[in-house]
Image 1 (tube, rainbow, N blue to C red):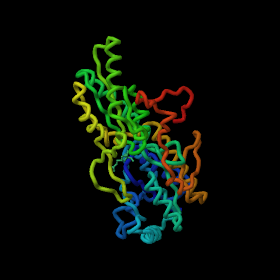
Image 2 (cartoon, rainbow, N blue to C red; image 1 turned 45 degrees about the vertical axis):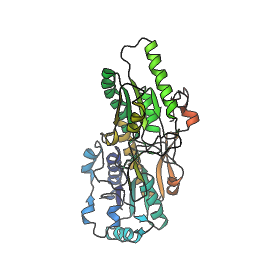
Image 3 (tube, rainbow, N blue to C red; image 1 turned 90 degrees about the vertical axis):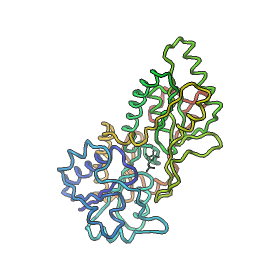
Image 4 (spheres, protein in one colour; image 1 turned 135 degrees about the horizontal axis):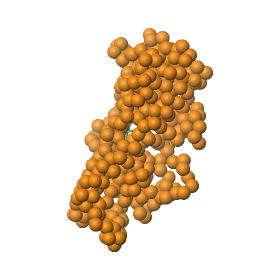
Length: 360
Ligand code: F6P
């Protein structure tokens, strides 16, 4: 058997370990593996020699511990409405003598995989996104590493915030899902956490902040600073999300970013010193944590098992701490967002403490 493996969408820590996991299991069965560079682009252009790389067991050691994607990523959509390249994908598979594709990616990459599967292409998927919001799986590669970066960055910023007695906005990614902000902010003991799932009122935000400052003064704190972890997709009630620019990618998405700075501007007249930092790509740029290495390896191993068994048209998922097979079209179902009632304290604009539910 000959398997092609690709990484699509934004890079995330855990992609390389997943490729290493694919190669590891494939080697065990004597299967060949070709790395397809730049996501779906490798199969959707006619001249793709530069996109193909042979992957043998010698890559495992290096791939197992590296962040980003050695195979590179792109947001190429091979099946976009006005430019459907399914036929080129098929021709390329024939030319490369590929029996199966393992696609590692999020909603878009696996959505394209689903479409291609319906048109006869044998493909299995592995879920990846630091946002951890994919339908059908409780884990996606990159989330744990990004959370750890957020937690560590909040600690670093606290030094400066404490020294200058600052109100600090720390903006994190997540697109429309607040998991990174919620769980990163929880770990950092953030004073306020803003998530996309709960559009807020600026007056209320100011009131909560004032109360937090008053409480600290009453408690006799000498160094008073406040940390607000803000998800890039969070927004004021009745307002749109803050976009980085007006460009759309091939899947029709715009990039978010800047809401922390916007809020800083709105608050700086009422509060003495406000500061803003967006973690942006630093969140994705770390070496994978133990969890992302182990999960990548398991996902990769499992994907090869699925190929071996002819279980095409599925992606690997995690359900109640077990690896499961999920049908590819499910990836298009509504993303798994923060359940505000269950997880979020809308009064204090912070995580709702739970003592029983460990799953999320
Ligand atoms: O989906 C992963 C993610 O990191 C989001 O959290 C973020 O909005 C997006 O990708 C940023 O990527 P890009 O710069 O390509 O828009």
